[in-house]
Length: 497
Ligand SMILES: Cc1ncc(COP(=O)(O)O)c(C=O)c1O
Image (cartoon, rainbow, N blue to C red):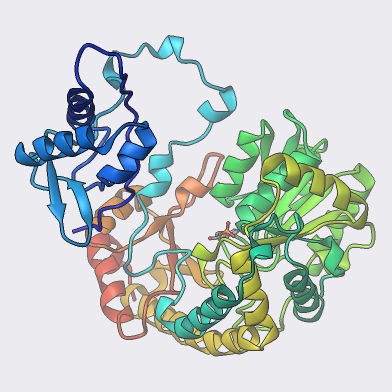
């Protein structure tokens, strides 16, 4: 059973001059709090001494009320863990109850912002989460050096002084920003200094801050089509209009963007490994995009979310590194390369905009939480980060190869694999299927096939799946791919070679 928490004093008043006695008031106060669900089964209540002190009364009425509540079974007393609301009370007593019945509420009188109404239901994002093969955005959890990480956590916890309780630097911990700047200059060809690096809680917050600084409601933003849905939500939420621009084998089609929406104030791109198709933006497209941004006075937001792992061809450097006009805001994250619950990402902000970004930061959350930043700074400084990337690159390469091989074996030419050169996912196009339906059925078998079609905003969405291979072992791969084949049924199988 869950350990009884809190020992907090419930809100009820006792009045010394009331007609009923203090004992009765305390007894009634507790009984009502339990029956109304304000106090839940197993929850610890304060000791009689503490309650008497807090209510400013003698201990006797409190003792009497407690012994009555114990006698009637509302309370239970345990040696060593004090007095708790009896865990054996029936579920219908002391269970969570909605404050108001949702059914009776009139939606017309409960107007919320248009921006929030424009968002997709959160349920759509929640359905595809769980442990099992192919979940995109899951890493090789068992490959993370957790005990090493924990030893750094312990070291920091042990040495944390009272000063560590204060607000941290709103841009993020200096040591961490230094390490990130060094890493980005060396491994990603980003032109930056530490003072341009802002630590954020994942690239999602990076997008949010960037959108708030660069764009006004109603501004148009080019988004890759198909593109990252969590980015769609950010820009919708800030009142911007999304202009979907098709992605082809060379990446974002800049000429199509100019034709379609020349007035766009910004373009969001994933040039190293397009999400979700996985293509790498060619040098020519990169230069076209930079030229467009400079001549139009627009911004480029580069989401470089998983470029650490590349399996084919030369390492691709960042688009930001090519920019001579400070038009690019670069966003990176530790969600893929380390682990997503860390919620640490970073922005590299053009020199002249640092102060603006900082002002926006103050408006949003004042600054990032400090503890994990310090742990991460040591993890990088002591060489564990570089070692981890090297080790995981070969783990993921094996998983990726196993996935491609098994897809080939099961589907032959019926499945067109895209975007397998880098990262921890690939896309597989399967014409003539309904990806969303199959994905729902697959989830019942704990198989997480992210359907491709919802990533398109325009008509003519391609059907297929985005398959994460980060958390799927080589041993699991054959049976997991076989399950996909079974789910798709004979029609697709018959076209396999
Ligand atoms: C395109 C893209 N950007 C960024 C991220 C990471 O987001 P965050 O850093 O908020 O975890 C992901 C994760 O799946 C992604 O697919």
